[in-house]
Amino acid sequence: MKQQPAPHQFTLLKKRCFAPFFWTQFCGAANDNLYKFAITILLTYQWQTQWFPSSMAGVIIGGLFIFPFLLFSATSGQLSDQYDKIRIMRNVKNAEIGIMLLAAFGLYTQSVIILLVCIFLMGLHSTVFGPAKFAYLPQVLNDKSLMGGNALVSMGTFVSILLGNIAGGILVAIPGNGHLWAAFACLLMAVAGRISAQFIPPLEKNPVSNKINWNPFTETLKNLSIARQAPMIFKSMLLISWMWFFGAVFLALFPLFAKDILQGNEHVAALLLVLFSIGVATGSLSCEKLCLNRPALSLVPLGAAGMSLFTVDLYFSITVPDMQRLLSVGQFIARPENWRTMFDLFMLSACAGVYSVPLYTFIQKTTLKTHTARIIAANNILNAIFLIASALLTGLLLSLDFSAPVIFMLAGIVNILFSYAIFLTEPGFRKKST
Image (cartoon, rainbow, N blue to C red; front, side, top):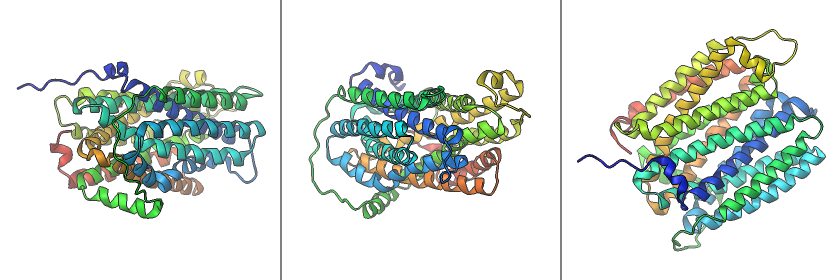
């Protein structure tokens, strides 16, 4: 019998169980990236301090944002498994408004310390929100809709990254009071996310055991131990974490890459993020169609191969102009030698979208509903470890005078080695269907 196709993924945006949730997470991701990129641009191009190295701004800010995922993901997973996920989401959005008020004060006074503290707090906000977000989806979507739902969330996340980064780059470049406009936009996004969260419908209440282990270290080890009991799930988590490691290398280095290699201004740095984000969104949305006639997990090796192929080609596509002034976006696009660079960046990110969505869907489908948030939390812990390692390794390579293009190429080579080392030890990536 021919299998009934799943409803088209975009129809989910009309459903009350999905649409308010989608826009809540969209506003949160947009605000995270608007704030992070605005501060990165300010500290890279505009504000100079003796104790903060501008060339390391992207790496330091990325590391600060992800550090709470390592410390508090295990606790967040427990909370989402035992308490009302909707209430957790709303309380997180309340906290986001407070963080953005503090950040606005930091931008007004140009206090780098306050701005970095708010980076950490926004990371904590996302740490608590993450397990509730991914555990919510399998409770409101059936198996046929789950791939499409994850694709939309992935697409929405990276489009929001795109819009947040564009807004952050444009606002802080406004002469005179750009940093204040950025502060206002961040606060507005936080309020919009809280309003959306109010319309998420309630879920069935789960029994509360009140047995929360508040020790983040022992609970982190426990969550990782639970995840390792299912080898296929654990290997999927490793692959997802590697994808974030890979992407973090690019996101951290875009401002430096745009300024020192491509000789572009702040808006060129934003353009690179636009291409990267649109690419991931395009790849994510293509997963539902690509997996119609093949096992969904078989898309993962295909995505990994594309990520490495286009990353290596990106290295060979780069031409360094000899310019006295930084190029504007129009001038950068008008140079044909940059078209291949832009195409490679778009394609490698599209392949990353194809790589990640089937892995998230597999984990959600094969995990017990009562433990979904804790498994997602374990995944977030691994993500944090990989992201912190990415920031430290990128910083080390920069300190050793490796250029951004060389670091990109190294990431592409390691990507194919790491990914296929896991694929070759797990036949499920070729045989199993999600």
